[in-house]
Image: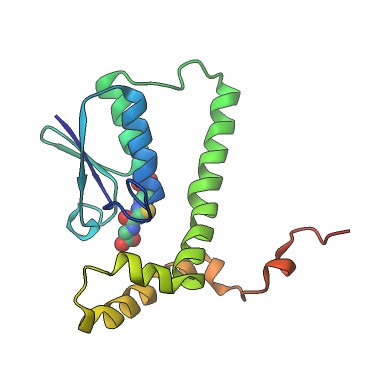
Amino acid sequence: MLVLQIFPPALDLKSPSPFSMKAIAMMQMSGLDYELKPSDPRKTPKAKLPVLNDGEKSIPDSTHIFAHLKKAHGFDPDNALSTEQLAIAEAFRRLIEEHLYWVLVHSRWIENGDTIRRVFFAPVPALMRKFVFKMVVKQVKSSLHGQGMGRHTIRSRKSMHLVPPI
Ligand SMILES: N[C@@H](CCC(=O)N[C@@H](CS)C(=O)NCC(=O)O)C(=O)O
């Protein structure tokens, strides 16, 4: 049985994690039998979700899961693509996962932290909630700083046009 470990449901989504949603979409498209298992990333091999469990094997990272589904189960939705189309798809994947993902992280954790605290931290005992949230935000800020986006100053939406409006 295939078991897909994901971030637990929130925000009316099967999972609020874009990488978990990507893996769920792949599993659905594959037509294979699988179960979803809401999990804690701290208890996974790379401290990230999603992770696919296939028998004894544990496969972290949505891209490795995709490769595993192809190799072990013959699921290859890209098999009709030309080399050029595969290259374009890869470029878009990296744009989304390595750039736009961080825009989402910034928007959620820095610009809309109150909502995140209310929704994601509801299970944390009330007395500790503020403290735990602050600790996690500190880690998120450090990741955003490492990626680079967190080093920029937040400006108003109006001033964020890449090209000034005419
Ligand atoms: N490259 C990984 C990225 C996975 C990832 O960043 N997952 C985030 C949730 S969207 C996570 O588990 N974060 C937990 C943490 O950083 O502590 C993939 O494609 O699966």
